[in-house]
Image 1: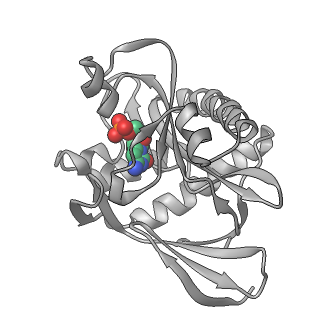
Image 2: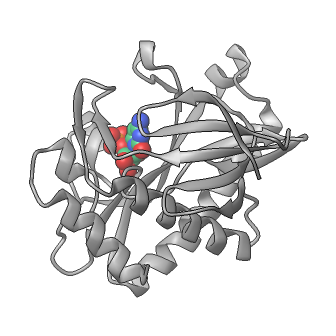
Image 3: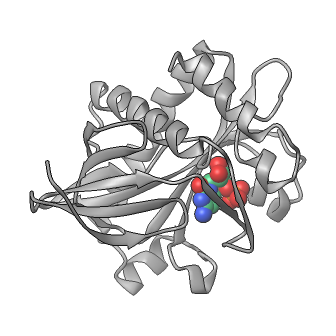
Length: 234
Ligand code: C5P
């Protein structure tokens, strides 16, 4: 496949056109941002971890019937993906209270939730990705009712598959963010599944093995990403 012009550069990835109209190439960078771009830094080797871990997760999910944008990993940092049109929603699934939910509801981080929480945020950097509910989504036309139902069902199924997987490597999946895309009339799981987009805690010690180490200046960021790769066997 021939790599052509750059289509987009985001905070953590670049996207390139290819000679195939339905495919593009994602190039994962080491750049790290937090708090809507207010905190900036580099996590050495992060692009490699996020590329390889996302592809591993997408393959696992495909095996369980979740359609994803993955086509083919090209090398450590680059992957061919289907050229979807992104649904402008960040879909967050939470198994335990942490981060913004813990703050908003005044819960201690790590508090058990009586049931799984599903949240939607409207993807807009200028607005700071505001949380929206289904009424907002339908009223603003971000997605149709059928799409919201399908996305919600897929997100909850992804949660079950990932929780089972991570438990086997002594990792608790506290919460994570997904993005979906439209491709020839079908909804596909897109974007990435990585320590940038998930909260991973060691099941026994509750040590954080994800981007919170960068967000909160905890140190040991690269080591945490490497530990996750080691446990997955990558
Ligand atoms: O910050 P908050 O608690 O809302 O984050 C919930 C989950 O969504 C975390 O796993 C975080 O890594 C992920 N997230 C993300 N990108 C964002 C916001 C949150 O990957 N823009």
